Image 1 (cartoon, rainbow, N blue to C red):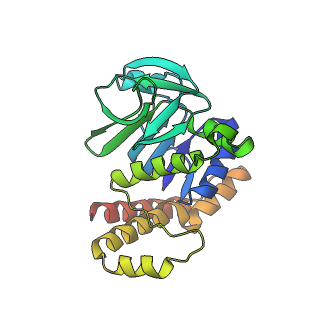
Image 2 (cartoon, rainbow, N blue to C red):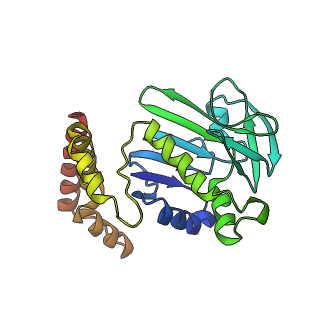
Image 3 (tube, helix red, strand yellow):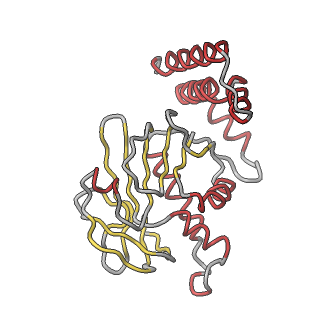
Length: 248
């Protein structure tokens, strides 16, 4: 599950983005843990996630907290990722080169995307505004000079690669479903991966998809407190999810 922390004005384009990048997601809920947390707000927040991605062309509390050295800000540069060039339509923040480079500026070879790991969590700081870029591409489209560059697909590919490099499993199929049989056959030969996917799905179901959560939402809307029975069930579900997680 991907948790997203964005500004209110970005919420519409976030929904559109995940129509293209078809993975389970939600706007971050306090107290929930996620496989991936994506933030565009650059705040000092403790995210419970295996992979934390912060996109922003401005400096913020996250940068200070992680002691990141910001070098400069550039307007509409051409960027390079995995030897692939693509345009940026907003600003880009660059960082000191001591951490591993993900994305760099073409003209000056400065780092626009960096990554680092600590026990249990992987981090990436990318110095542009992902959803602002997506909004521009969806609303205005590519200028003629860059019409041959699949910029939106590149943004999706960068995110996909970061997720896979963090050891988080994605099961990918073609949009038309033409390779479903091949993908399923391949999964059948990977019992450990299937077990991990099944365990993760079970944990997500216990923490998010039981009827108790629907009832809590309904009661909150009408201004009522959860019943003791609901609280007992929710606590039991959390215990089961923790047990399943600890069996990894």
